[in-house]
Image (cartoon, rainbow, N blue to C red; front, side):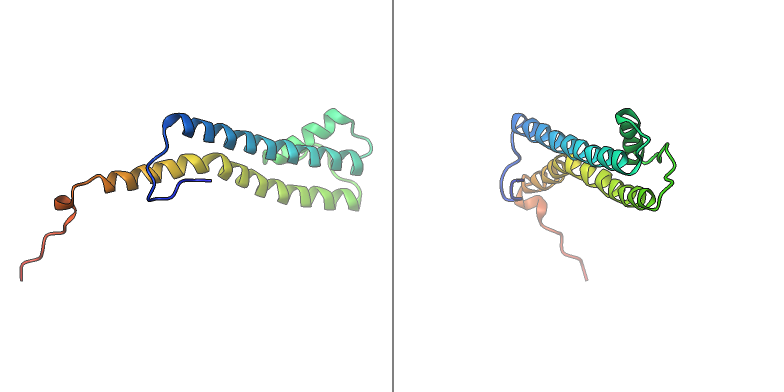
Length: 128
């Protein structure tokens, strides 16, 4: 997905295209996770409607915690598993979105090093 260190830094237009794809993938991961959470809340919390399932899934996914307290064992197990999954998904989606930025930054640092003339790259010898 990313260019090799020996390749030049991609142009700004290609980078923006890469960033748009990364953001769309990150949003897709969040929407998928929200859908799983809503389905679980509707299944394990029979008193909740779609709006309540959405807000509970969104609150757990954002790290705030649920609004509805689980009453059954199945609801408690789902809530715990979804909370663990949500924590990991939040970190993974952030990694997907920020990976192109970090890669470009590091690639530019390396590219700048390659543009230094050979005379400046040599390390002076120590005097004994």
